[in-house]
Length: 265
Image: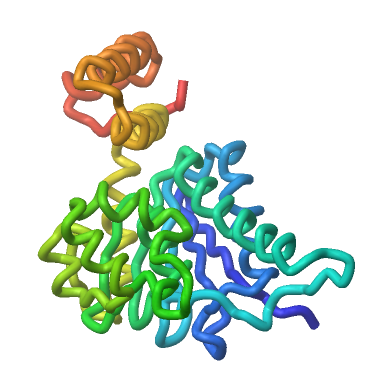
């Protein structure tokens, strides 16, 4: 029987996705990366799922790459095989950013290398007290910039803190992550999932299209060429959403003092 490398639990408009290789510290083998890529790519067409919670079974979130977990190609060069692995994992991070659903990540224990990047690619992060993150690559003879770390980390914590950790590969504690804004809160391990589901519930109170476009604008405006570009995108979104049926429903619900009945139209 093949290993079930991820599990997916549906909770209405919220899905809980769990890395499920606890005996291997949820390290990234080829089946795990393929499963994550298929899942996050498929979310683009599954708008009935409005929020995703990403978590992991066991004592580690993800301890990085499983060096023995990739099928060798006897006809490919070492460089070609390494390039394929790199691009496949990078595609997961890109799919996480491009999917319309906000991703709430909750993490415990080690989150190393690609596991660190899974957290960086998420929209909101909650940490257990024992969370320890690092971009491990530079400690094994590679460069410290890999799997999107050099893109995400400076934007999330600033260039000085990002340089400190990418140039050394040292571990960032949950306390340090909280202090520099990388995680929203440190939560006892047994309360992590409930914390994420509570936030997901708050997100579900918003209109479906409004939630999707807010994630889209946040991601695009991180790289906006200017303040004017950011305002232009926001203005277009607001004008479009103001013509939607859900906006009319929101106004009616406000005056009638009731929750809105979102129809995603």
